[in-house]
Length: 204
Image 1 (tube, rainbow, N blue to C red):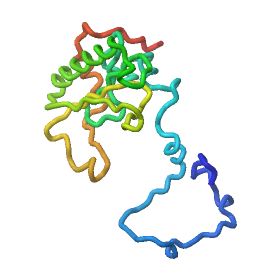
Image 2: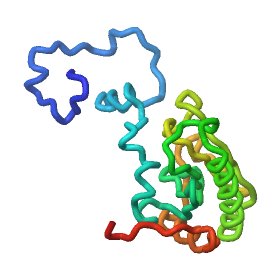
Image 3: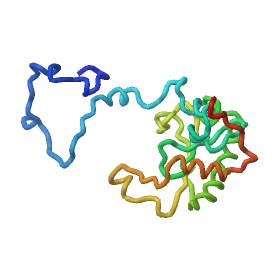
Image 4: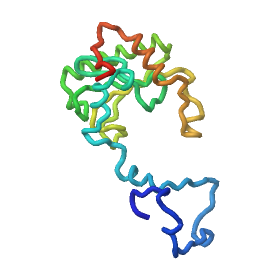
């Protein structure tokens, strides 16, 4: 099978003359799991999810409209947007506009504004969603679990007393009760207008 070639690209002719072996003759211990074979994902697994610098979503987002980029607030050095893959409704990210990878590379002005925006985000989320607490933190570097390791971002995850259930553990699934667009509108509406910078127009 050629690397990077999707399953759908193969036909019967590609396997002509290939001997098929029965798995009954293999050394194995049967279990209750079903297997979904997805060899086309090998490219993703080998290369990971880290985008090229010119494709960095955190660099691209500020040039888009707030609605399209899911941005809820813009500061002078940093901005706040919804996580496209949230752990909970209202999961926000605070990012510097500048493309820096780790916290120690940020300037004093960027660090100060990240902290200020984080405080404001906590107040706004508490007001619009009545959350009971927060998880706040950064994954620094790919080995530490950063989804986009080359652009610094801080997570702000609102938590409720009953927001955990069996789904994440048993089914690997998170139940998100509100659509991203609705959450963005609520948080943006609750954000103090005095701290907002102007976003690009829809035509730009």
